[in-house]
Image (cartoon, rainbow, N blue to C red; front, side, top):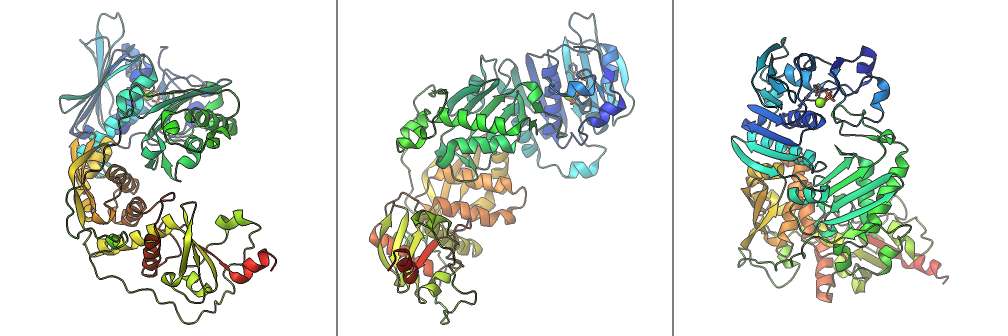
Length: 623
Ligand SMILES: Nc1ncnc2c1ncn2[C@@H]1O[C@H](COP(=O)(O)OP(=O)(O)OP(=O)(O)O)[C@@H](O)[C@H]1O
Ligand SMILES: [Mg+2]
């Protein structure tokens, strides 16, 4: 590496300024990136007290001579770029010369370093940004940076830190994100004196991803277009999570949170994924360095592509084509034309997981806790509280806005885009009938319930309708603190991120009030011990994962998350599109809809009902 020098002010000012030190995990990221930039092949991270007490990073990289060491703690001192032009095509993690001095200003910083082959090493101490003290020191080749008492001089910032467990969990996650694209480096993570993770050197990133995310269902999706190449190590759609917390994205080895790439992954899965859900795994994109600008975010977690459109299309099509051959796609018995319709160009490959995907174990439920599960499939959704009174439509059926369905669908295909009816409106539209009074005709595509009312035809989305009913009942039970929990005979183990486990630990009582009993088992393992009795048929693992992810997304405010969590729960516990419904089940669902508010929409806001008056139908067929 070349010598350290101060950047000219005009260059320094062009560099995205901002706070780089938010919490211990951000310190860890900066220190490990520096170690990697110094050519380290082994990096050991030790944290104490969640990283607030101490974070130390030891590497076997190039080290620094005394002059470079003294300069490196000054603002805008970097060995990685010299001019503004160098900002284009940066090949190192660092380039701003900002991390060291920012960390030094809010901690007690000690650096011990020796260059390769040097007779002795040197040490520098900086406290709260005060002038550095430099002296010779005996040490191994490479560098150790130790950051003690983070935020000791900024009590306001320190107050915002979460529990040491949560901060430690965030540190481990930061290290995992850094380790994924660098299988050539060995990483160790020590927490309060104990080695809790070790990632050995591997030949390729796929092996590293499998090391950090031990999940046999991950498939390898690869491909390239010109100078752009993509490697995805991704899970099946049925294991997708709400939100993108389990999907790691990289551009030229740098972890990013990029909307364009997220959208590309979601589009590659197409209709296999519900909106807002993303597969677990990692996607590594390599583009020519001059085609990506990394200097757009103070923590360098965002990038800009040029030209952006090309990257999006290339990543989407590569992943989509490779996903067509993924073991989980082939296993899912999809219509043969679904993927082949999208095939074009060279065929990227999907490699199978190393071992067979283990069969999903049958769900093991303990004998039901009160209330007992009754035979009627809808009755089991009823809360312990008194059943709500059936909805009685207002006698006045004239709508002040005129006809509620002005849209003129040009053909059957436009059903789905017709304007949704206002809540409770279908009752008025169809002569004030209740849902229960509709004549149930049958099921279409195992997805829609077709009904005949006095005024016209009514079509319901069975999943959206069931979801609304479940949601309302859960919400009523939650409000009266009577969500009955169904214990699992054999608790299910699930892998989560370390920070999710910390969240489970902090919020166990809140989850229990929602009928979801969770208990941490290890640093990244949680046991699901019970699910809401109303949702006894849902998959406990998926349900627990999604609920935790939903709460994590809302930050610390649990009360804000409740409705969203209830909606997630309702989604799991409800009949889905594709499920066959018997006539009594369909009738029971219709009757249940009368008892809930806002029956016109599912909890996610999708319309439940589409209706067409007889007159409109007659016009369409020219009667
Ligand atoms: N572990 C290390 N081994 C060798 N040199 C290092 C190490 N850490 C830092 N340095 C030197 O100190 C300089 C300053 O580091 P600092 O992290 O402040 O800035 P940077 O990495 O250049 O840019 P950025 O602020 O974007 O991280 C680096 O440019 C590098 O020369
Ligand atoms: Mg740096």
